[in-house]
Image 1: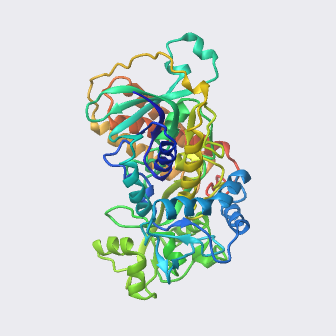
Image 2: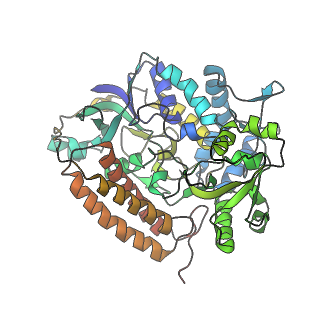
Image 3: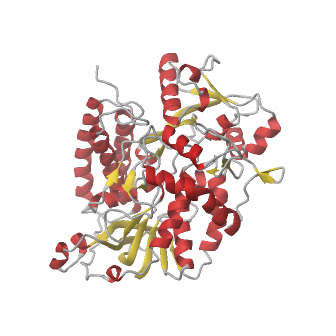
Length: 514
């Protein structure tokens, strides 16, 4: 297969770039490993997207981003977002796609979240990501220039150095010209060649034991880029969301917006505790709240803390947070009357594949957007509700840039054919290896890190990776083995970055070994 643009991933960043480039007449192939395009972290984004407050300004938003990011943000990225973000929301989400954002007296309802100095966040109830994604996908599914391939897994990026049959190509400037793809239904493996390739594969939360991310968030894009030699940045900055539902049925994100609307964090004895850690109390930046909860759990010997919004009117709670209310009702908790048990969970990767303001990576013809990328915007800790806006801004910018015709992008070398193996893999190996990855990352590379823990994690994961690579070469390729291979590589990449970063900053907290 051959196309102008190959997009790997169907979250907000991927579908926006697809629409922008397809509108410009480019042929786009969009692939996702899931059965539906409504996948990834975007549909799980509850709180909202940054727009602009009544007394707001780009300078105020910039200050909030820098403060949340512990001063480690890249200034050009902040300028790009604060200068174009609200314009893009108006042009694309409000005018083009008519997203049904909540209203208050005929104007957009503005709410606040942690570390925001102004109420500037617009939302679709407590299902903002889903509300945006569903509307955009209606157009993606019907666009004549977009071909959609669901249940197709990108095995690896096609690069001159790894896949070209022409030995002269290794002397050319490294470039990407598509990807090797597995059709998960037919088990066929084939190349999709593209003038430009966009990685929009999302997050990596599933390499941790506790995460708010969906099952598909395994770090696939980071692993593919790492193997191709693409530069990655800030992988040590893993943001842990302070409040996910603590229950035997699993973790469920309890939006920051609850605290923005007045919910208070309390310990098992009913005492408010975040004022002991920060002047903003329950609305402090996420890394501080997460560690405050972690420390309180240790101090009280209790497996969770509690979030209390029961002092608000029942009708207001149910109308503003219907998804959270219904989820909690399913397990027997009425949030209008009871406290919600919560714990921190791996939520967002502030780092990723290094890109510029139009999504270009260090590898020619390869772009990265969304959570898999590192624009430099988030620094050491992401400001609440900035992720969807980053997806929008860089999705639009990248869609424009990949649509520019460049002669150098028309080179497609002859490549080696792929030989599929047929040995079946033991599912017990997959399950056990994932337990090793998740527990290692949670216990040694989690909220609080030490050098000894990190060295232990690297040793465990290096050994495991050699085992996984050995049976990867021998077995029939499936989604399960590809995700495992990518998961261990991504985990190792995070550990490597964390070991090199010796200064505690933002989400990266190093404790001196005793």
